Amino acid sequence: MTNSHSKNLETSSIRAAALTKVIDLVDGDRNRDHGDPTENMTRFAELLRAYLGNRSAGSIEAVDAAAVGVLHKLSRTGFDPYHLDSWLDVMGYASIAYEIAAAENKKSDHLAALDDAVEKALGAKGKSS
Image (cartoon, rainbow, N blue to C red; front, side):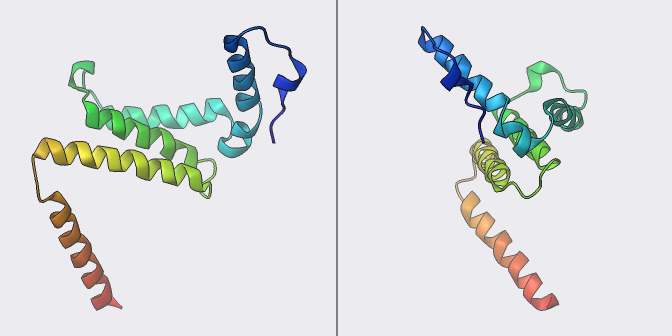
Protein backbone atom coordinates (compact mmCIF):
# COMPACT_ATOMS: atom_id res chain seq x y z
CA MET A 1 0.00 0.00 0.00
CA THR A 2 1.61 3.20 -1.16
CA ASN A 3 1.11 6.60 0.46
CA SER A 4 0.69 8.18 -2.98
CA HIS A 5 2.39 11.45 -2.23
CA SER A 6 2.55 11.85 -5.99
CA LYS A 7 -1.21 12.38 -6.13
CA ASN A 8 -0.92 15.27 -3.70
CA LEU A 9 1.99 17.08 -5.31
CA GLU A 10 2.07 18.77 -8.68
CA THR A 11 5.40 18.35 -10.38
CA SER A 12 7.02 20.60 -12.91
CA SER A 13 9.71 18.27 -14.22
CA ILE A 14 10.55 14.64 -14.82
CA ARG A 15 13.12 14.92 -11.99
CA ALA A 16 10.49 16.10 -9.53
CA ALA A 17 8.09 13.34 -10.64
CA ALA A 18 10.84 10.76 -10.12
CA LEU A 19 11.66 12.10 -6.66
CA THR A 20 7.97 12.02 -5.75
CA LYS A 21 7.85 8.36 -6.81
CA VAL A 22 10.86 7.69 -4.58
CA ILE A 23 8.97 9.23 -1.65
CA ASP A 24 6.12 6.80 -2.32
CA LEU A 25 8.55 3.87 -2.37
CA VAL A 26 10.61 4.67 0.71
CA ASP A 27 7.64 5.85 2.74
CA GLY A 28 5.38 2.95 1.82
CA ASP A 29 5.70 -0.73 1.05
CA ARG A 30 9.48 -0.99 1.49
CA ASN A 31 9.29 -0.64 5.27
CA ARG A 32 6.52 -3.21 5.45
CA ASP A 33 8.39 -5.66 3.20
CA HIS A 34 11.96 -5.17 4.44
CA GLY A 35 11.72 -3.56 7.88
CA ASP A 36 13.43 -0.51 9.25
CA PRO A 37 16.03 0.73 6.72
CA THR A 38 18.71 1.35 9.35
CA GLU A 39 18.35 -2.16 10.77
CA ASN A 40 18.43 -3.62 7.26
CA MET A 41 21.54 -1.67 6.27
CA THR A 42 23.20 -2.67 9.55
CA ARG A 43 22.62 -6.37 8.73
CA PHE A 44 23.92 -5.74 5.21
CA ALA A 45 27.03 -3.97 6.54
CA GLU A 46 27.78 -6.90 8.85
CA LEU A 47 27.49 -9.37 5.95
CA LEU A 48 29.62 -7.15 3.75
CA ARG A 49 32.36 -6.83 6.37
CA ALA A 50 32.41 -10.61 6.81
CA TYR A 51 32.58 -11.20 3.05
CA LEU A 52 35.28 -8.63 2.31
CA GLY A 53 37.43 -9.25 5.37
CA ASN A 54 40.63 -7.24 5.01
CA ARG A 55 40.61 -7.08 1.21
CA SER A 56 41.61 -3.87 -0.51
CA ALA A 57 39.33 -2.03 -2.90
CA GLY A 58 41.67 -2.90 -5.76
CA SER A 59 40.99 -6.61 -5.26
CA ILE A 60 37.25 -6.32 -5.85
CA GLU A 61 36.15 -7.94 -9.10
CA ALA A 62 32.92 -8.48 -11.02
CA VAL A 63 32.17 -11.71 -9.18
CA ASP A 64 32.44 -9.78 -5.91
CA ALA A 65 29.95 -7.19 -7.16
CA ALA A 66 27.46 -9.99 -7.85
CA ALA A 67 28.18 -11.46 -4.42
CA VAL A 68 27.46 -8.07 -2.85
CA GLY A 69 24.07 -8.15 -4.61
CA VAL A 70 23.43 -11.55 -3.01
CA LEU A 71 24.42 -10.21 0.40
CA HIS A 72 22.22 -7.14 0.06
CA LYS A 73 19.16 -9.18 -0.87
CA LEU A 74 19.99 -11.82 1.74
CA SER A 75 20.14 -9.15 4.44
CA ARG A 76 16.50 -8.39 3.73
CA THR A 77 15.50 -11.96 4.54
CA GLY A 78 16.56 -11.27 8.13
CA PHE A 79 13.40 -9.20 8.46
CA ASP A 80 11.06 -11.45 6.47
CA PRO A 81 12.42 -14.79 5.32
CA TYR A 82 9.10 -15.51 3.57
CA HIS A 83 9.27 -12.52 1.19
CA LEU A 84 9.67 -14.56 -2.01
CA ASP A 85 10.93 -11.69 -4.15
CA SER A 86 14.04 -11.44 -1.97
CA TRP A 87 14.85 -15.10 -2.64
CA LEU A 88 14.36 -14.62 -6.37
CA ASP A 89 16.77 -11.68 -6.24
CA VAL A 90 19.31 -13.79 -4.31
CA MET A 91 19.08 -16.51 -6.96
CA GLY A 92 19.43 -13.97 -9.75
CA TYR A 93 22.59 -12.41 -8.32
CA ALA A 94 23.98 -15.86 -7.47
CA SER A 95 23.45 -17.01 -11.05
CA ILE A 96 25.35 -13.94 -12.29
CA ALA A 97 28.19 -14.73 -9.87
CA TYR A 98 28.22 -18.33 -11.07
CA GLU A 99 28.39 -17.27 -14.71
CA ILE A 100 31.26 -14.87 -14.02
CA ALA A 101 33.15 -17.48 -11.98
CA ALA A 102 32.62 -20.14 -14.64
CA ALA A 103 33.94 -17.82 -17.36
CA GLU A 104 36.92 -16.90 -15.19
CA ASN A 105 37.65 -20.58 -14.59
CA LYS A 106 37.41 -21.08 -18.35
CA LYS A 107 35.48 -24.31 -17.85
CA SER A 108 33.49 -25.02 -20.95
CA ASP A 109 31.94 -27.99 -19.23
CA HIS A 110 30.78 -26.14 -16.10
CA LEU A 111 27.14 -27.07 -16.77
CA ALA A 112 28.09 -30.73 -17.07
CA ALA A 113 29.98 -30.47 -13.78
CA LEU A 114 26.93 -28.86 -12.20
CA ASP A 115 24.69 -31.64 -13.56
CA ASP A 116 27.08 -34.24 -12.11
CA ALA A 117 27.03 -32.52 -8.72
CA VAL A 118 23.22 -32.40 -8.71
CA GLU A 119 23.00 -36.07 -9.69
CA LYS A 120 25.42 -37.02 -6.92
CA ALA A 121 23.51 -34.97 -4.38
CA LEU A 122 20.18 -36.44 -5.42
CA GLY A 123 21.66 -39.93 -5.48
CA ALA A 124 23.05 -39.49 -1.98
CA LYS A 125 19.70 -38.17 -0.80
CA GLY A 126 17.88 -41.14 -2.31
CA LYS A 127 20.24 -43.56 -0.57
CA SER A 128 19.71 -41.93 2.82
CA SER A 129 15.91 -42.12 2.62
